[in-house]
Length: 406
Image (cartoon, rainbow, N blue to C red):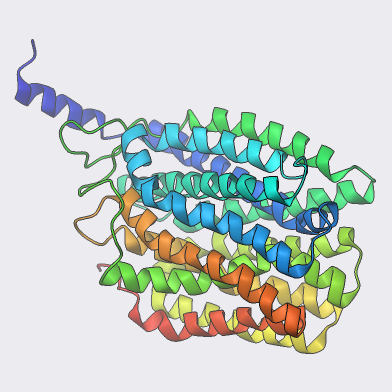
């Protein structure tokens, strides 16, 4: 039998990935971010399909979106524990398959009463998938000694652009929305399960007796946000409120208030996600040259001004350009703030990400009923002013982001 100290040393050695393992894990994680983005893009472009299929008004559509947000936030109370117990690799694979299944079913329910619990499952699986791959991304940045989070989130934005553009093309060709969703979800479920196999087998910093994939020191269970975690969480809240409103409502705005067809309106989502992707691919370089506070401040200001111009102009061409600028402005939020959360001492990476994301995803709880309520008594254009407000708060609050060491 191996001596305990030798076994412990061997375990520590296994937790130091080789260069080849890191490279493979980076590509696998990029693919998973791409997959999550494509699923979100497909969902965002099909929000009008859900409204039409179930004959929903803006108030009931807000209830559907709220159900997804409830599932997403609820999942975050145990996501850190699941990732710590199962490992990021297994948690990501399981969550991806469940997410694809729940999205494939979104147009198959007999009525609203069945759709709502289905949306809870959809939101819960999405947030677990999100925490798992962000935990992996943070570990890759730490173990590899170089910034990769903006690149990974750029792949998410590329996926969103591809998903929305694909929906637009298929709608133009007359392919039924339910058929689109099943084909896309089946392909992405298989691709995600395969890609997850390339993730790191375990994360450094696990304590004795930790399960595979435990990641960083501190408890793996949910950590209530306080201090720096709370500050970061509130900024993520502002960013996710703006981003979530764009994902869920920008296509409907272009169709309903600007007068575009659903196929053309889906291009607005693609413009938003595409510009966000380009900005994020440059984000790691920008983080090396400029302070994270300055990047968040400039990005929030750009998003607020661009969205204000879009709503005042109510023109299709202005809207497409404006949505692109909003995407570019909001791009730094998630990569910077998720990674900042993992630098808070005493909490595991998965628990820190789940903690700040629980506050951030509350933006998805507030957003749908807020937008629906304002739109019901005024107009969708007036309701989308929430994006201007959220982006402005993000710009103002950037001063409280903890600075990186060095």
